[in-house]
Length: 421
Image (cartoon, rainbow, N blue to C red):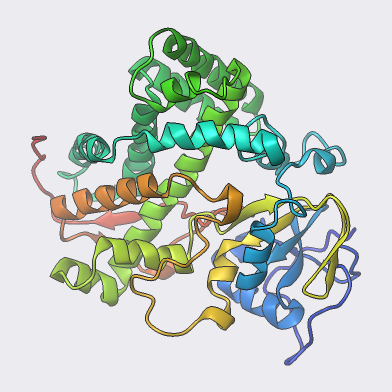
C-alpha cells in the first residue's frame, strides 16, 4: 500500500495505454484527492489520470486509504446499476480502517438507506423516498422565499457579502429544518451538533448533541405527527426504529447541506463570471435552470462519491478490483468523459451529479427547487452583483468528495431591505 502524495497532476507518457491488473495492487504512486493542489485543479488531474490509466484510477482518499476512482461515464453506469457486485455496505472495509481515519465517519456503516444493500436498503429506501416525495413543492417555494428575504436583508445595505456563509449555507440549513419539522430550538441544537461534528476536536460531542436533538424531534413526531419528513418516516409501514430514524434523518441533513450549498454557490460563481450565463440570464435568454445544469455537468457539488465495496475480486475494464476496498465514482470526471462530450448541453440532464441506479438521489426535484429559488431571489433583489476580485482568487476547500469554495465574496450597490410579502 503506497502513501505517495502527488503535488500536482501525475506525469504521463503521451499515448500511454491503460494499466492492466489491479490499480489497488499497482506499485506506482497513488493520487491523493485530499490536497489543495487537487482542489485547485481537479479537471487537470482528471485529464492526466485518463491519459495514464483509462477509466479506473488508483487513488488515496486520505493518506494510507487506497481506493479506485472511476472516471469513465459508461463504466460508472455499469457499476451503479449492479448493486449485486458493487454493494454500498462498507462494514467489511471499515473493519480494516483505524477509528481515527479522517474519511471513516463519512463512509462507515449506519442503519440508513445510503450505507446498506439488498432487502435492508430496500426497506430504508422505501420509507426515505416516501418521506421526501411528501414534500409539497409549491409550499416549499414560499418557504425558500420566507428564508431568503430576511437573509438578504442582513447584508443588502452593506454593499458586500460572502454569499456562502451569509446566504447559501443558512438558507439551505433552515430549508432542511423546515422540511424535517424542527422547531427553532431543536433546529438550533441540530445546527450546533452538525457544526461540531465536522470539527475533529468536538466531533464526539457534536454527534451526541445532534443525536439528542433529533431523538427529541422523533419522539415528538411519533406522538404528534405533522406534514414533514420526520412524521412520514415515523409513521411509514417500514416501521423504522428510533435508531433507524435517527440515522436516516442525519443522512437527510448530510445529503442536503453540503451538496445544496455548493450547488447554489457554484452556480452563482458561474453566473457572475461567465458571459454566456451572466449576460444571458439577466437578459432572459438563459435560465437559472440552464446554469444549474451546466454546474451539475462540469463542477457537481459532490465531485467524487457514490462509493461501493465489491465483495469479491472483480474484473471491469481490463482492471481487477480487489474485494472490500472502496470504488468511488467521480461524478465530475465521468460527466467530463471525452467519449460523451460534444454539442450544446443546454437542457441536457444526462449528467451523473444525482448518481444513478438504486442509490440515485431521491430529492433532485427538491434540490433543484431550493437552489433555483435561492438564486432567483438573490438576483432579483441585487441584480448588479459582482464577484469581488477574479475567479482565479477563489479558494477551493480540499477534500476527496466535495467541490466547494471556502468563500464567495461579492459586491453590489447598497440596496434598501426587502419587504416579505
